[in-house]
Structures are given as structure tokens and as C-alpha cells.
Length: 119
Image (cartoon, rainbow, N blue to C red; front, side, top):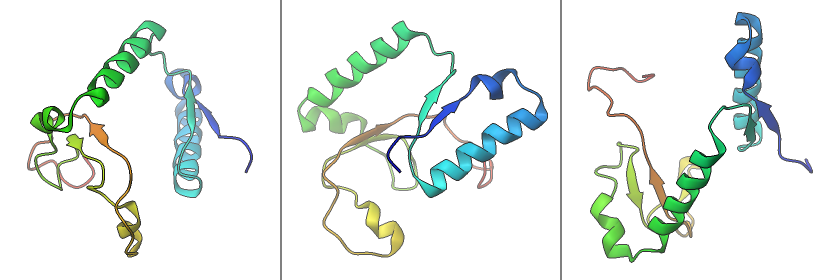
């Protein structure tokens, strides 16, 4: 594959049940087979995207000790900061490799304890 797939969410946001299902299935297939994609038609205002980008650059420029104030609280809670060398994606495939050279910050809603596995 020589291009990154583009998924247009406007069809999902404005379409019928069948159109929405088609976009959902395409997104699912793209994530499973390729692992990444571009999203258009999301309706996130450009100024908000630019502000978020500036804030994320500011966050990742900070010293590690400062970023650790918002560290991921537990491995099963997908929110917070994970420092460089603290994760290895290949372990999800049963492979042993050196840690990934990346750091992440994940955000999301607080999930109720009784929400079930597909909340």
C-alpha cells in the first residue's frame, strides 16, 4: 500500500443506517488490516485542532518528572501519561522486544465499574 487510507466521517454523521454501517465496517477493516488512517468530515473546528496540537507539543516538551504527575494510574486504565520505554506493542503478539521508543498521553471518560467489556 502506498497511500494512507482516508475515511470520511460526514457519510457516517449524515447518512442512513446502511451508510453508517458501511463507514463503520470500512473503519474496522482498515484498523484491523492496516492499523492507521486519516479521518476527514469529522467536524472538529480547525482552530480547536490547532489549539490541541499546540497544547500537546507543550506537554511533551516538559521534563519527565512533570509529566509523571498525570501518569497512567494502572495498566488496565487507558488514560494518562506513559513514558518512553515503558511499553512494548510487540508483547500483544506474544513477542519479546525492547521497549518502544515513544511516549503517550491518553484521555477518555471515566468508565463505570459495571459498564461491561464493550463500554
